[in-house]
Amino acid sequence: MRSNILIGVLVLVVVGIIGFMIRQNSSSNIAEEVVNSTNGIVATVYKSPSCSCCEQYSAYLRKKGYGVEVEAVSDLQSIKEQFSIPYELESCHTMEIDGYVVEGHVPEEAVQKLLAERPDIKGIGMAGMPSGSPGMPGPKTEDFVIYEITHEGIKGEVFMII
Image (cartoon, rainbow, N blue to C red; front, side):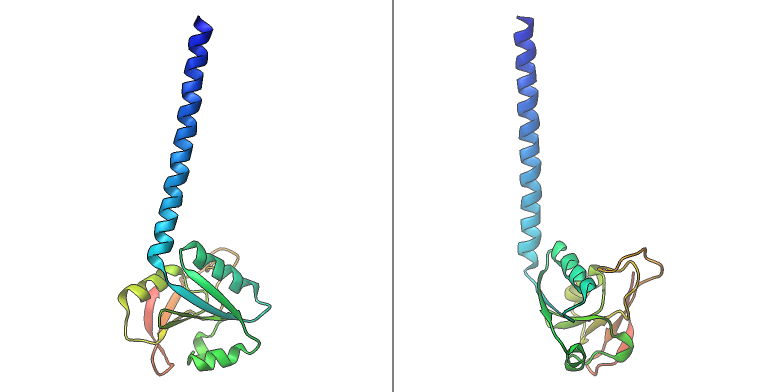
């Protein structure tokens, strides 16, 4: 009789644990679906065919809930000219998102701020390929300074420091 009670308790505990795990899994799936469906923004990342850090940046954005299309182009400089990217802000990829241009390994917090505030600028950019920035290996060694890109294609004011 004592063993029957013990088996019954064990069965209840196992059923409870399985129920808890199913509930946790479905809650996180629901949360992920909400992020993906409410975001609904698709970014187009223009990159050189051989650039792997641009792929990492695209994966980073997908993880944050953005739809991302990657276009490998043989002449990336023509894309930079098309979007009037200032020379001093050039990086390894250029992104077009919801009417704005984003140059380089800009953290998603700055992209989010750009899309939320919708300033009257062409876009934002962060020069080079800083260590520890999204898509780049290594530790963060300095502040990430993101600048405005004016409608005239000129490096503008500091947009955000992360």
